[in-house]
Image (cartoon, rainbow, N blue to C red; front, top):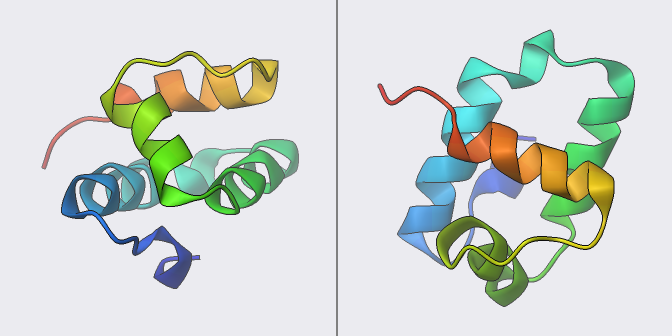
Length: 74
């Protein structure tokens, strides 16, 4: 999963790896599946959600984006 968090943009790498490190293990199976599905998205769409404030239409992705953006900094 860590490898899948490595993207073409450093900003995405930081946000996704921070979530993986701080919250992924504590999430339930469904949330882990949602995160895996989220990582299937293309970088521009991830950037829209995580960097530009675009709100995903999918409720699970919307919840996940909020969790990713509120992860504590190292």
